[in-house]
Image (cartoon, rainbow, N blue to C red; front, side, top):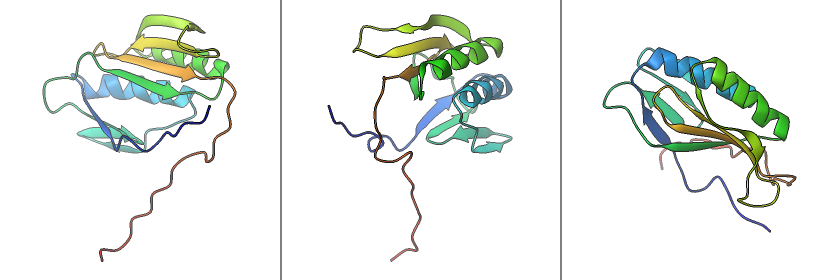
Length: 137
């Protein structure tokens, strides 16, 4: 099966109650996935396409799913997220979505469902999408 990813979403804006608590949670959860926060300011932080602020009513009921390169990374994500204020919403394990789907779910400090998922062995055409800004025409 061949499918395309990395073309639909430009960014996700997540609003939270406590920016510091959310920053600690997402920093640890993303570090377990081999990722890091890409910007940190007093009023916001981001990681790739995820932008987080505490400027309005908090986002609720959102499901975010982060890609993991293997099962061990899913397990590290779950452990790190629980250690930094997350609540278990599904321990690491196989799911029935498709063969090889291995995931863990944690509720972030605002109750959003955050998942790390490994889809099984695959080959990517590129490790990431690189975007280079060009001067205006």
